[in-house]
Every structure is written in structure tokens, then in C-alpha cells.
Image (cartoon, rainbow, N blue to C red; front, side, top):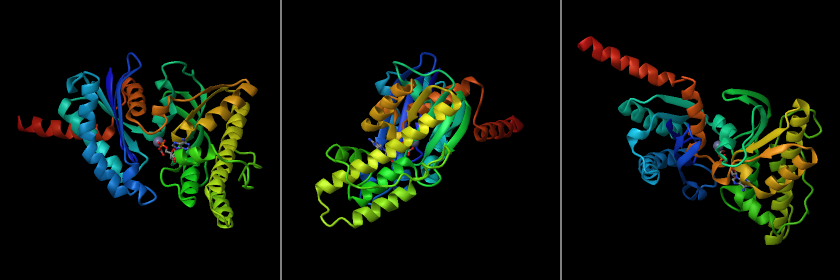
Amino acid sequence: MIVLGIETSCDDTGIALYDGTNSLVLANLVNNQSAQHAQYGGIVPEIAARDHAAKIGPLLYEALKQSNTNLLDIQGIAYTARPGLVGALIVGAAFGQGLAYALKLPIIDIHHLEGHLLSVFLNTNEVPYFPYIALIVSGGHTQLTIVHSYGQYELLGQSLDDAAGEAFDKTAKILGLGYPGGPAIEQEALLGHPFFNLPSPLMHKKTFNFSFSGLKSAVFRAWDSVTHKNKEMRCNMAYDVQEIIINILVKRSIQAVQKTGIKRLCIVGGVSANKRLRTLFQQAASMHDIQVFFPPLEYCMDNGAMIALAGYHRLLNNERCQTFDFLINAKQSLYSSKE
Ligand code: KG4
Ligand code: ZN
């Protein structure tokens, strides 16, 4: 079954064609809007929605061309329905539902985080088996979850305030490194050394929750007190922030593995692209005899393939988008009464 995956929850327009039967991504195209938002220091919802609307059609055209398929090869549609920027989500929902209606295809609405949770299956090498512990580290979420099976998720803990990606983004903003902050911080950190004394919030508590907003305030105060705000100091701050965030994530994840006895750990979401994070997780995993998995880099950030994969399993389970069923039924009854 070939499923079209549509992702428009934030600032990435993602379109993918996924062959679920053969676990194969036929095309995965992402248009990232960060250059358009950079001058505002964060995402502008109106700009995001307009750009999704402009790019989504051409991206589908390109995906079909690249995979040497046509619209009639698509057998199901999956789109990100929540959570996200409402105007941005509506673009993907309307596009997907319109297409499903025209092509008479089954369609399913997907929770964005389910896409991230399952993104490890987009790996062509080694994939985990159920159950596994997933750490989602993205711009909007930091969550520890047990993935029991497709569609069966148990939340262990989450950030009580800012997400890990947000901590990267806000630190980058304070340091004048622009948006998105994660890759910029990672780059600067390569030249940095331990210098600042930053706090590890909540780490003294026995919980699977996280808190990163205190760290942001600490960075702000520490940076404010620096007299010579030069490249060297910026790199040191990037280094210290990156180390502290990653160490918190590693420590909590290992605790979750130890508490549950599930020795498979998957790190997913935009921040999992960070190389230092991957190294420290791998080190901790080998120390504690745990298997650690990451999605390939192109599937860490928001993309349509992870939505198509999640959708494939739900469609296979005969699940359908309720709103669309309602539309179909309404239309059928309208026509049948005229005939
Ligand atoms: O999963 P994602 O693409 O979108 C959301 O669902 O939020 O994650 C975006 C987040 C941003 O906060 C970005 O700064 C962060 O992922 N990020 C990184 C790196 N690449 C992206 N953080 C740290 N290091 C990176 N290399
Ligand atoms: Zn995401």
C-alpha cells in the first residue's frame, strides 16, 4: 500500500510517498521555511501557513516525479492533524482531504508526535522491536514514552515548561545566533570549553519530568554578566548549554530504562540530529548494556515520511479520519436523495 504523508504542523512542508508493504520511502521532500522566519527570531504563524499553501502542490508533483509514480498509485493519505499552528495544520488537512475526496481514497488524521515516535522504523538498517522507550526531543516537546506497539503509547514524563529544542533556540537567540538555534549551538560548541556554571533543574527529583525554563533564565543572566561578549565566550556558552541539556536527557532516559526494564531506547525529533547527543547517548547505552536507536538524519526533523508510516499502520487497522467520513456520508446522502 502506497501512502501519501503530509506534514504542515510548523515550519516544514513535508510530502512523502511511503510504500508500507515493503517498508520503503519512495520520496521524501521537505521545504524548510526557517530563512523566512529568521528575521523575526521565531516562527510567524501567518507566514508559515501561506508558505505551506504555496509549496504543498509543487512538492507533491515533485515527489511523484522523483518516485516515478502518479496520483493513481496512491492508496491512502495521512496528514498531521495536531498539535501545531492551526493555520498551518489546516493547509495540510484541506489539501489531504480534497485529494482523498477527488481520488476516493481512505484518509487518516495523525498526531504529529506519533510520527516522531515511529520515525525509527524509517531506518533501513537496524530497527527496534516493541516495547521500546522513546525520548522525543523537538522544538515543542520533550517526552519520555513507552511505545508498546503501533498506536499504544504510555507517557512516562515530559517537560513541565520549555522543550529541549526550545532551550537550544532561546539560548541561540540570547547569543545572537539566529533561528533555528540547535544547529548553530552545535556548531559553536565545537570550539567551546567548560566555563559557565549552569543549573540542572529538577534533576534532584525522582520523576521522569523535565524543566528547561530555569536554564534559559540562567543563560540570560550569565551572558548578561559577561563583559567581553566575543566569539570565544559565545562558544563556551554554547558548549556548556549543550552539555547540560544532553546530560539531563541522557540521565532521565537511563532512569526510565532502569525503572521499566525495557532495554531499547529510541531518541527522536529535531534535537536527535545533534552529533554530541548521539555520542553521549551511545556511550551511556554501552555502559548500561542498552540498545540505542536514532532515525536517519533526514527523519529527525519534521517530515512527511514519518506521518505516512504512522498513517499506513492505522489505515491497515481500518482506522479512518472521522471528519472525512462525515463529509463522504453527507455527500452520498445528498446525491442519493436526488437520484
Ligand atoms: O522535530 P522538529 O523538526 O520540529 C518540532 O516538531 O518541533 O524539531 C525542531 C527543533 C528545533 O528546536 C531545533 O533547534 C532543534 O530541533 N534542532 C537541533 C539540531 N537540529 C535541530 N537541536 C540541537 N542540535 C541540532 N543539531
Ligand atoms: Zn516535530
